[in-house]
Length: 392
Image (cartoon, rainbow, N blue to C red; front, side, top):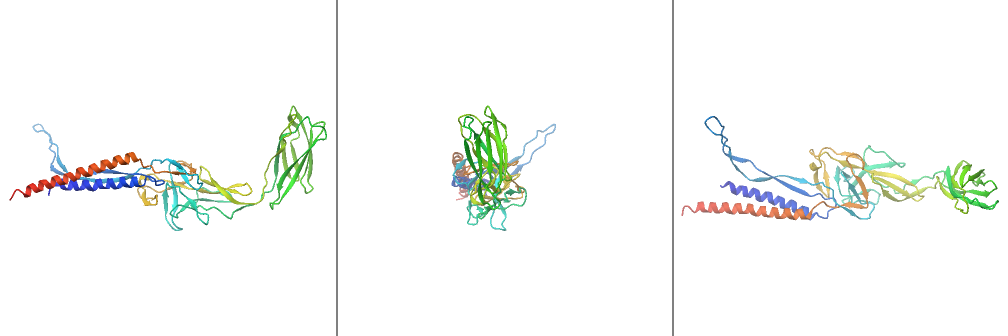
C-alpha cells in the first residue's frame, strides 16, 4: 500500500486536532480566566531508503535518502498570558494582576485545584466559594491577626463575629480658640467615651477665656476632673497642651489661638462600643478586612495564591481549573504581592486571553491543511486505481 496514503491520514488526524483546539478556544472566548491552547506538530519516523555514504580519497560522500511517514501532534500547549480586566463592581469578584492561581478545594477532603477565574461568592455559612461550589483556600484570622505561612483552609467570613468594646484611654482636640474673645467667654466641647463594657458616657471640656489665654477644665462624669491653662503667642501654642481627666489623656497640642476663628472641636478618641460585622473589603495583598458596626476594621482572612515552576505542565480539569502534575512541579503557596505572585484587584474579573483574529486565522490554516491532506488520499487512490486497471 502507498506510504502517501497513510501520510495523508496522519495529516487529517493532526489537522482535525488543530480544528478541535481552535474551536474550543473560540467557544471559550467569553469564559472567565480561560487560557487559549495551541497545537504543535512534528513529523513521524522516516523510512531509510539508502544510508549515507562516507567520503574517501576516490569517492564522494552521499547523503541518506529517507521518506517521511506523516505527521503527528507533538503537544497542545496552554498560553498563560494575562487576560484583560472586566470591571463588575462586585466586591467578591477578584482578579490576579500578574502571575499566580487561586487555590480551591472541592469538599472537605478534596484535592487542591488551581484557577485564574476569580468569580467567587459567599455561601449561607459565609464561606468563599467558586461557581462550582469549591471552597477558596487561604488563611483565616484569629483576633484580627492573620498568620501567613501556616496550613491553608477554607476562607470564611465570621458572620457572628463581635469586636469587643475598647476602653477610651486617649482623645484629641484641635482647631482654633479665638484670641479676640471677651474674657469670661466659655466654649464647651463634649467627648463621647467608653468603658470596658462598651457603655458610653460624656467627658465634657470647658474652655474659658482669661487675660493670659484659655483655661481648660475637664469632667468625665464620674468625679474625675482636671484643669490646665493654654497660652498662645501669635496664634501658636506656647504653654499647656495636655490634660488627663480620670485616666484619659487629652491632647490639645494642635490647637491654635488666632483671632476671629472659633473652630475648636474633638478630632478623635480611641474607644468604642462592641460591634458586629456589617461588610468587608479586599486589599491588594489578599487581606479580607471586616468592617464592623462600631466603625472598627479588622482582618478576618487572607486569600492564598499558588505558583508553579512550569505552569504549562498543569492539567485542565474543567470548570476553569487545573491540577498539578509531575511536570508542573509542586505548588508554591504564598500571599498576593509576594515574590513571583501578582496582586489582587477586587470588583474585576480576568477575561479570556483568546485572540479571535488569531484563532480565525488558525481555523483557515487548519481547514486548508485538512483539505490538502485529503487531496493526498484522493491522489493516492487514483494511483491505486490506475494500478488495478493495468490488468483488464
